[in-house]
Each structure stands twice: as structure tokens, then as C-alpha cells.
Length: 338
Image: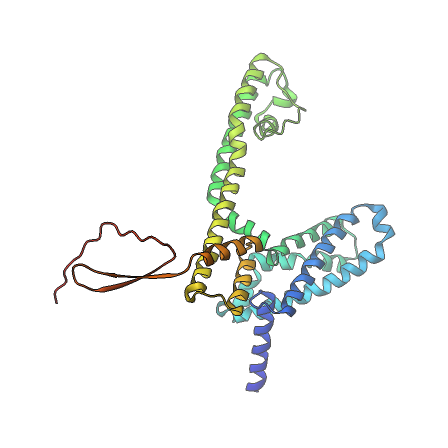
């Protein structure tokens, strides 16, 4: 009995490591690529099914693809819930339920529920077919680029929220002002503040559909003021995201750089260390070229050990460094007595 339990735990651990990308074996990589391709195929299928002619012509192909993907994603979801027991906080029944309500587990569930609902109620509801597009969010498990985007959004969420909050206030102010100066002339478009919000949003985001425009001189002047003030505000969230991407990429490169320095402490990179660096670069979404550049730059800087002697106590100090120059500023010696 204990042997069986031990085997089950061992199998569960292997499943967990494969699904959560804790292992980098060829089999695990094959599973991940297969799931990514299947997700992309089903997303493309949902898009093509919106064309009635294409859907009826290739209905059998779409049905087979959906049946296969439904089976695979259902098994994957069951295995994910079961293998989550490898994490201490999810081992109990209450823990498993807690795992089910985690964001990624909800996405996994939403990727299969619409199809199961469609099978049971025997109706081809367009909304259920459209909900299958939730599967595209499953790519965040397998795509390092999507993972990078999620990390940036998490880190910059407060700044992005602040930018959108200020933009929302500006939209309300613009809608209120345009309602006051143009409401009597165009009651359909600016008769109320909620109606004017459409114009304010389109104008401040610099989209400018032109379907609703001010006609009076006062309305045009006010519109110019709002347009000029909205140029910077509309670009602010994009600037925050761009800055966040730069900081996150630099942070990941610095982490990779420190790992390379650690491996180069003996002056060489062996085969096992190079493999670990390739895995780390993949996890950090660092391109092969950037990784090679970092390694090349650091290998040019040979680790040096400089011995210095304290002039006060004659203590030998060894300093490991990657530079030909060492500068020590403001060194203060303190006598210690026991």
C-alpha cells in the first residue's frame, strides 16, 4: 500500500513538473509545443467558423478538431488540479478548491466549459462558440512573451490605473464642457453629458471618427483646447508600458548577468552550466543573441583577485573583481578592542 502511494506521488510530481515547466526534458518540451499548437489551431478555427460558408464547408473538420481539443484540454485541466497537490497549500481538499479559483485555473476551466455546455444543451449558441477564444489566454503558460507582458502589467498596474483615472476625469470634464457650449445646438449629440462622453472619448484618445463634431465657434475653440490637452494624456499609458517593458527586460538581463558571473567564478563555463544558462535565458524571455552577448562580454573580463593590506592592522584583504581598476574611497579604520 505504501509502495502504491509512493508511486502515485512520484507520478504526480512528474505530471506537475511537466505541466508547470519545472523540467526541461525533450518530452516536456514536446508536450508544451503540442498544447501551444492545439491552442492556436482552435483559436483560428473559432475565427474561421464565424464565416457561415467556411463553417458549413468544413464542418466535419471543425467538429473533429474541437472534439480532440476538448478531450486534451479536459485531461490537462484534471491533471493540473490533481498535480497541484505537489504544492503544500493545495494538498488538502480545501486547497484543491482554492486552486480551482486561481486565475489561470479559471482560464483553463473557461476553455472547456463552453463546449461542454454546447454538447449538453444541444444548441449551437454563437456566444458559447465565441467564449472558446478564452483559450488564447492559455498561451500565457507556454509563451515567454505573454509571461513578460503579464509581469509588466502587474508591476505597472498602479501607474497604469492612475493614468486611466486621470484620463477618465478629463473625459468627464470635456463631456461636461461640450454639453454646456454645444448642447442647445446639437441636442442629439451633446444634449446630455452621457451623450457627449462619446465625443470626448474619441477626441481625447486622438481617434477622431468625425461622426460628431462641434459646430459653434465656442464649441470648436473648446474642442481645440481639449484635443491639445488630450494628446499627452492618451499617450501616457503607452509610455508607462514601454518604460515598464524596458525596466523588466533590463532586470531580467541583470539577473542573467549575475548568474553568468557566478558560473564564471572558476574562469570557465562547462557544458552543464551552459545548459542551465540556456534554460534560464528561455525562462527570462532573453533572446539567444542577447544571452550570447552577455556571456561574451563577461568572458572578456577575466576574474581577478587583488590582495590588499590594511595599512592600520596589516590584515590581508582579497577582492574578487572583473575590472582592471579598483578604487577605494573614504576608507575609515576603526580600532576594535575586546
